Image: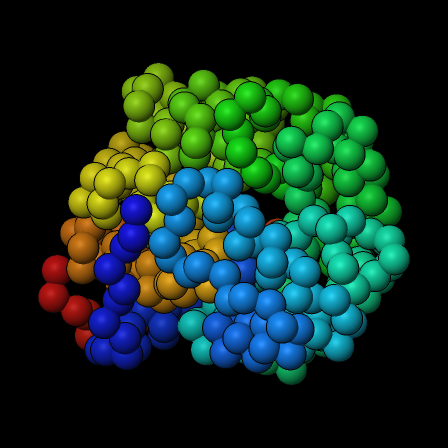
Length: 340
């Protein structure tokens, strides 16, 4: 299902761009700028993938695969990282945790080579643009247990060098989060966070499983709203859901933003951050998501400031950065507000 695009630059956009926030649910390759993608498609002689309109999850994954294939040289990867971090800075993002699957990189011989390049390049971009960067090594839940263990071991080797967490991505259906339990244990032993996708295409039982496995955050997690007991578990645990409303509408999890459970989850005391998931493919950036949450979902500025606080506090960014950013949210709340 498609999602009407935000109206573009507006007082609302400027207002939420000024709100300090962490972007915790964003996939690196799909944060590519559209003009960059079109340039590389032209240079490589490949068809531009569909954007925003996906008849099913498989077609979405096909479009994502093309973006991965475009990143076939280190120079392109470096450009992508610089542009993603620059865009984050312009959107008021103080910390970005980008996810990728290093062993799918087309630009490097091995996943280890990919991280050896990506991590310092991202950190350098962060210093240029004033954004802290952390990398999430994603496990492809459909690639089997050997891949999961190797991805976790790879992430562990780069703990303290820019990798902050292990994630779990791709279609949940038939690939439960519990299958990654051993990989998560490896990540924890290395001091890394665990931030699986759960409760997007599968139901609240997957959110419960992620909580039982000790997830630090849950990406999506919105299907928890279907089971009051799971909602209560989330609220009492303080585990943050990294919610991406537009993604959920475009991929048919909900028919419209008006049907999305984010307002109800916040009302029930669940901590939520707001992310854009795959900005290029879904046609929204993280500021657009805040604007849509305010204007089309009826979430108040105060509640959205709370989402920004949750994003900062739930990130793996340094404590000093968190302290300063949270003070910035307080300052933002004291300035002129938009109509409710």
